[in-house]
Amino acid sequence: MGQAGRTYVGLDIGTTKISCIIADMNGGAELRVVGVGTATSEGLRRGVVVDLEKTVASIQRAVDEAERMAGMSIKSVYAGIAGDHIRSINSRGVIAVSRKDNEIGPADVERVIEAAKAIAIPMDREIIHVIPQEFIVDDQNGIKDPVGMSGVRLEAEVHIITGAVTSAKNICRSIQRAGLKVYDLVLEPLASSHAVLGSDERDLGVVLLDCGGGTTDVAVFFEGSIRHTAIVPFGGANVTNDIAIGLRTPIDKAEQIKIQHGVALAALVSSEEMLTVSGVGGRADRRISRHVLASMIEPRMEEIFVLANKEVKKNHFAELLGGGVVLTGGTSLMPGVVELAEQVFEMPVRLGAPHGLGGLSANVADPRFSTGVGLVLHGALSESGDTNGRERRGSSDRRSGFDLRRWFSDLF
Image (cartoon, rainbow, N blue to C red; front, side, top):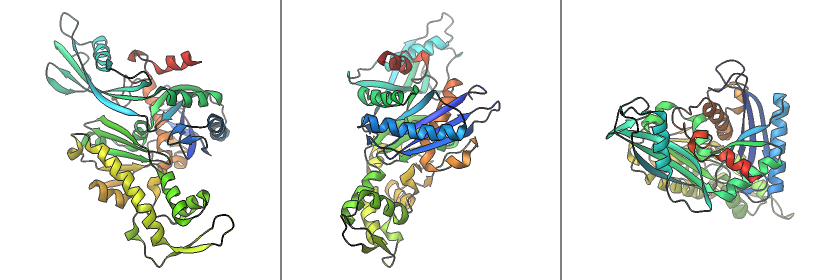
């Protein structure tokens, strides 16, 4: 994984918080977390930049904090992208093997992926990732790496993730305004999956749900590769809004009430437990039962899970997912969320936190940091030319024909 002495920086630009995680290789084979910084995110809505200046200031605060902890300054980052504009499609490419002796070489693999990428994409969209799922050599399917095999015809099944050009540009622009280079843009649920999923889960089939502030990101894996990705444009911020309106209390107070007393399943709390709600504009405080609060949160969380479940059901693998659902992201920390998800998905659900790092890993062993840690892991894996053997020819790779890094440098 990665070269010794290299530093990797993950920048998770979320709707509610921005986190910056710095990790290095330090000669060993293990990544060590050396710096963590978080800042309240201002200037984003549902994962998309709506106020550039505020976003830049928030990025700088998070990066400064991480730099101080690590005792080093950073130049470039792996950044996450999410938002309602993300779309994914599965595509297929077919080529004839070029060599006389029918041996498949790396050039053939590139050609077949290029063929699979040749789909009509609207002008306002850009390919973010091209992820090979499997290769088929002369009707023999399920091949992960066909190089060196013999065959006349080579096919590739790929997962293509596209996003709106303007949203991607605005994220890059805000990072560049903060004085940093963008090494690569990575789809957030894809990044989170590196941090929280085990390879056995990917093989069995699993749904990763990253419940953030502005969006809930969905990624479905089966037989070791990614099969479907989607972004549901609701998250913890919507729950906070519901509480603020329902209890007639300011947004920041609603957020505190949600964190301290919120439960996602009304059946888990008794109506005996009471809490105090601050009034708006100097009105008197009120007392309400925790059960009333839970019955405001539950419908919204249920709606988020139902929408996510619809996305999962778009796959013909939905029935075969033996690994169940893995929840991560800040909203997943609320009591009752796991139980509610089990009811909606009718599958076993577990809470996932980042693992597999050294150094200050205790500081990031929290579902809120899954995307940040995943971005660091993605950086290290893509430099070693192998993202768990799955996303070798993604956007960060010179070989992919379309090169995001070159696109960024052309922009400015």
